[in-house]
Image (cartoon, rainbow, N blue to C red):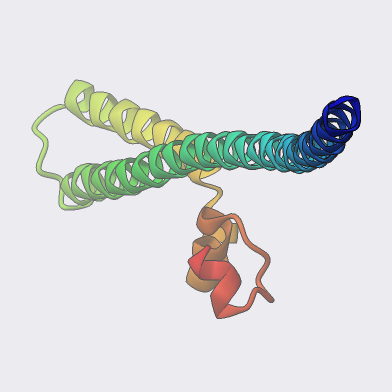
Amino acid sequence: LQTAAVKKRYALRQDIEAYTQQCLEEISNMEEQRSRLAEHVSGTEDSMQCVQSQIRACQEKRDQLGKQLVLKVLEFETTGVLRDYAVLLKNQRDFVQECLEYKMTSSEADVSARQRVVSDLNEQLEIVKDKLDLSKQDDKVGWAFAMLGVESCATPLEVEW
């Protein structure tokens, strides 16, 4: 009887040791899986931070380009308005000068008033010409490159961007 009990205890002890060994192996496998998962999550977090920083950089670049675009549009509109105004002033000056040349005036006071108008129009026209810097903008291609903010030797790809 004792031998049977000893044998039974011995068999139970071996079963317990085998089960314990199996449990330890499963725990070890689970620990390895947890560490791989932690590394993956850590790598994903690093990737997410990298992607978020790239997104922020792109948003900042977009905002900067948007501001530049608004400034270029304003400059373009201002230049267009100033050109129209310069044409208007020139036409007014020419009309008043023609009136003076053809002596369409009746008195000396009228002649001196028209001469002052021509003088004022010339001053205003000079101010507008200075603002436009027409001598540099006669080169329409150069002016377009300046409006786009690229060098005159820019490639079509650089002009598009």
